[in-house]
Image 1: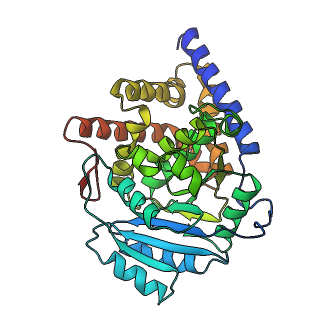
Image 2 (image 1 turned 90 degrees about the vertical axis):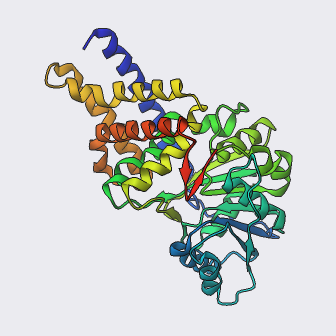
Image 3 (image 1 turned 60 degrees about the vertical axis):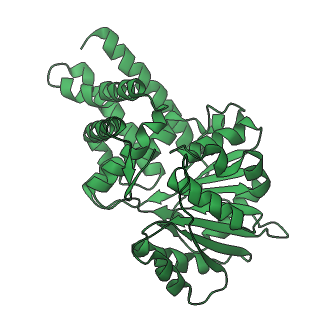
Length: 367
């Protein structure tokens, strides 16, 4: 390995490591500080778009309706499900008047399905805080109250939570925690919270709360109608308007199991990865090459050059640190080179879809 390549990988790992350590220390944890609720707690509208979610929606509804926050409504939009999602939601509510199930309207041109569902939910909501959440998000006792209390304490116009991810199969374990790696190791939380630049913006659509006035100010989901990564697009619009964005780790209070098999992981990430790279195939290819140099090449070079050992260990340690900070399996970080290879397969799937009609998810082509 040339001295130039060694120096480049060393510099990249140094920057990544400093960012990861700083974020591990500074990234706020939901409910870590017991902030009080506002004296007059605002009405919260919990808004869940659901398409073929009968397997999980009952548990989600039950967990939400058991929350101890004093003022909230729960709206679920049944987005043309074919598996009895609406019936499962109503059965779990057992007549609780806080639940309303809406039937989704036909998808207009130019809209991504989830964005259209969220926009319909926002129009029907009555709350001062609009909390968009996925159907498979798991709400622990006290989670909703902690979210509102932290939002109030930080005077946040938009608060997004990165749920604690549950991973079971090897496909999940090796890929899903890379979301935490990307946030903790590549995006300084101090810059997100304390600079005005939209480039330092991120959000997670699994749990995304906005004050109604902020949602209106940025144009809501109508302003990002065709954007697959609408959460990040909304976050950038929030910062661009001079509004306050805050990010929190779910800290075990809010969790999620996104996928349940390697095919689900592959397709779920493939539908978003190109949009996350500015819809640029060359940018995605350069990103993949960078990650091969940083996380794979040092391991491949170890048998030939002992100088690669600190670099190989460094990449694994960063992955292990971000896993520890987000309650993932720490020792899975030793397989970081395998994770990078799997992400290459995911990128290939995304590029294939780009030239064969667009990403596909839940029976739809996502344009």
